[in-house]
Length: 323
Image 1 (cartoon, one colour):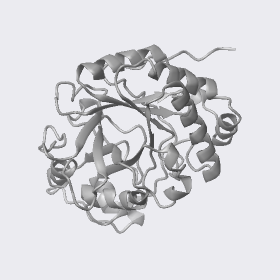
Image 2 (spheres, rainbow, N blue to C red):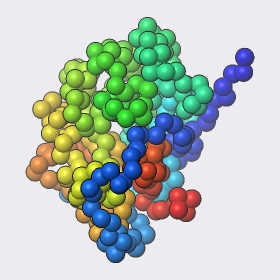
Image 3 (cartoon, rainbow, N blue to C red):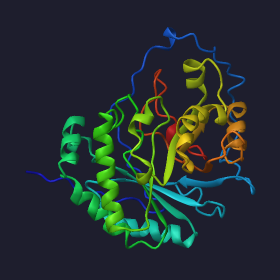
C-alpha cells in the first residue's frame, strides 16, 4: 500500500497547507435581503491593512506564513498550525528559533487530522479512534517535541468545535465526546511538556458552553473573529465593527473568568469598512476587560465562505495570486 508522504511545514511561521475541503453551505444572494452593494463605498486604496498596535492596548500576535510581520517588533505571539498526521515535527524547531529570535511566544494550533484530504477519516471514525487512544502516540510525539522548544508555548487543540458548517471533522461531535477527547489530549501535553499552557478555542457560536472542558483544562480561551464586508451585508444587513463581531463570543465565555484571546482575526473589504477594524482590534475596551491578545490570520482563507463569496484574502498585504 502506498504510504502518504510526510509534509514539511514552511519556514517563518510554518505555513498552513491550503487545501480545498468541503465548502460551507452557500445559497444564492438573491435569497437574502442584504444591503445593496455600493461600489464607491467598497473602494480599497489601503496597501497594508495590518492592525494598529496601541502602546497601551492589548497584545498582538500573528499567524504569518508570508513573513509580513517578521520585522515588526511589537508582535508578542507567533501562531502556527500543525496537523497531527503526515508532518515532520523537526520543523517545529525552525519555528521555535524564529520566535525565540524575536522574543515571541508560540501558539500551536493542533488540528486532529491529515491535511491530505485523501487520508482523512470521517467524523465518526476520527471520534472513535481518538476516544479509544488510537491517536495518543501522535499527540505524545508532538508534546515531546514541544518539551524541547525554548520559546513559551500555548497549545490549541481541535478549535471551533461547536461550528456546524462541516468545515472540521472534529466539530459537531457530541459535547461529552469532544470534552473526553480534549481532556485526553491535554493530559498528554501536561504529562510530556509540563508548563505548557492550553487554550480551549470555540468559534464563538451559541452552544459553545456545552463543550467547555472545565476550569482545570483551560488556561486561556480563544475565539475566532472575522469581518468580510459583503458577508456582513448579506448575513447581518449591516457592516459590523470588530467590537460587534467579537461581542457574541466574548459574552458567552466571559463567565469562565479566563483570559480571552482572539486566536484568529481577519478582515477584508473597502477602506471605510476596514479602517475601524484596523484601529480598534488592539484597543483596550471596557466592554472586554478579559481580552488579552488578538492574533491576526495573515493568509488567504482555506475554506470558501457562504453566498458564493469564495476564499477571502485576509493577508495584510494583498497577494496578487488572490486577485
